[in-house]
Structure formats: C-alpha cells, structure tokens
Length: 152
Length: 286
Image (cartoon, rainbow over the protein chains, first blue to last red):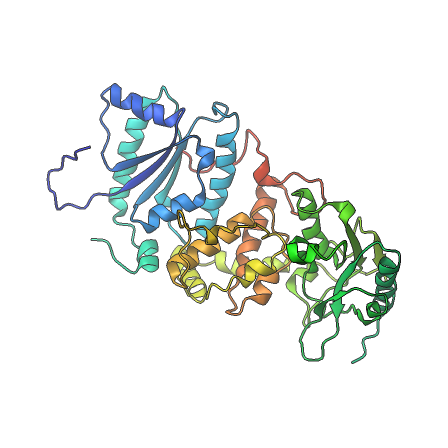
C-alpha cells in the first residue's frame, strides 16, 4: 500500500497489529470497503485467532522496530473457537503485568476487541493509537538496549 | 561426616524397604558430601546403599526434576525423596500428565525448613506435612513464625520507577551467560524441545546478549506462570546470581491475586492458563 505523507523525512510510528481472522480482520476489512480512512502506520498480521498470539510475537515485533503492538480479537463471548479470546486475555494480561514489572513501557502494547461489524470503531481506534504512538515518539528504551541502535 | 537425625534413620529404612519389596528400582535421595555446601542427589539401587541416605536442613535440591528426565526414567521404577515444597512440583507433573502416580514411589519427609540461613520460602511454607505420599518419615514439625517474607524482593522492585526497574533488569539479565542451568534444574521445564532450540523461526537469540537474554528470561518466566511452585532452584543454581526467583514469584503472586490460584497444592487442580472465566481481569483493553 502506498503511503501518502506530506514530509517524507518526518518520523512515522510503526504499529504492528495481530488480528484474528474472524472478527478484527473482518472489522478492518469493513473499514476498508466502507471507505473509512485510517492511518497507514498499522501493519496487519492476520492470525486464525487472538488465542494464537504468543507474547514472543510482541517482543519480536519490538526487537524488529515496532513502536507499538496491537492485539485484537473477537469480543468476549464471540470467539469463533468459543474461548480463544478468553485464553488470549489471561495470557496477555499476565504478560502486560510482567512488562510493567520489568519496566517496559506498557503504553506500547495495546489490546482491543473489534467485531466484524465495527469498521468504524477500527478506523477511529487506529487513528487514536497512531496519534498516541506519534506523541510517545520512537520506542527506544527497549530496542535500544537489546539491539544497541537508536532509531532515527 | 556423621549426620544423625530421626528423619535420616526412618528415611533409610523406608528407602531400603522400597527396594527390597521391589516397589522401586532406584531411590533418588540426598547423600552426604563433605565437599559440598548442600546434600548432593544420590541414586540408590541396593538396600545396603540406602543406609547412606541423609536428611537434614542442607537438603536443598528439588529431586522432582529427575522424574522428568528420560535417561533417569529408563532406569526403572523410581522412588524419590520429597520435601513438602518438592511435592508441589510433583503435583504439577501429575496434573500435567507428565508422570503417572502408579509409576512413582513418593517418600515424603517432614521438613522444618532448609538452608543456613533458612530460605525465605521456608518461612512462608504451608507444606511441612507432605500429603499423598506413599510413606512419610520424620518427626512432625511445628511451623516457624510465618509471614510472606518471600515476596520482599518483589516488593522492593515494585517500589522503583519504571525506568529504574528497566535499568535494574538490564543489569541483571545482562549478566546471563545462557547456560540454561535454570532450565535444566527446573522440574517443570520438561519440554523435549525448548523454544530456545527452535530456529525456524528463531524466537530467542542464542548469543549471551541482552536481546536474547531478555527474550529467554521472559519466555522462561511466562512458561512457568501459573505452574511455578516457587522452589527457587533456578535462582540457587544460577552461576551469575540473577534473581530469577523474583520474577517467578512476581508471576506466582499475580496468579494468586487474580485467580486465587497457588500452583501445586493438589494434583487435580485447574491451572489458570488452561481455564478462563467470562469476567476475567481486563485492564486497558480498547
């Protein structure tokens, strides 16, 4: 997808989004077909279910330069596989708390429930978290320590 | 070196009986070693050798770890000496169907705490009396003054600011030499193929650099969340003195606070990460 920017040298936040196939991906798709605009800063990875998300996905994304990671799945009760999102919630809430304990900025890690009908919610949410990521600036405290480079 | 205690005497008897009655081919227990600061694990195959077993407050190692090793299981039916805290690890192994209760003889010892000075976990111990063993030896123990002192190190870190915490963990995890002693000694790290040995894709960098060190230690602690029984073996064997137990304790306390769950208290419990509830905690979900 081509990215349209006023100043090509301006720093842009990179957001990696792990979406479940059945709700959030369809929600993002609906935003597309409904022509709701949302920032192109988000890179979508489609997974069968939010329960597929291993916390290592999140760490790896940060290592590889993500400024923010989003995990989105079906609303509680709506999982295509009955309980994948409940498992994801337990796992990722614990991971989030571990990030806090390690001192890694949890504002860089987002979770959301977006249904296949919530194209408008998706569009608005991406706009909002992109602005938040932009305000936070490049995520350096974790990657700089582990990779040894500072992002431009 | 002579080690005299009533527990030792009845332990030797129980071990000898397990072998003479053909209940077990090998008894895994503790032996005296003059050159060591703790009692070393010994494998006893004959009733005569069983007389060399000891039990006292230097019996630090968690012998449950041997139940998961294929080379040890190949020796035949195992009997293992367990303290109450070690029994919690055995309970998790039973819960996860790693071992079959019928295939293992458990020799429980009543333990009033180990380590000189006493380990922090012993002050908070609730398993002085091992439950569900085939035989229990030793005198009944009057628990020492309790308290949740084992969480002191966790509280200490939580008092810091986020930046201080991150700097602290960078310092600590930066020391890791990736020897994986923490994994080898852990009774619950029994995967045949560990995530650090997977290379397509490689989730964890194998060189002893902060990038892989953080990923490894995060993965290790997460894989033990809701499972770790807090035996503290990882921290005891760490050659770089990384406070691994603190990270595990943080996660264990979280499971207790969120899901009212303490791992290894019974063999038929339902672990937090294999179950869920509709009204689970949901902080900061958009």
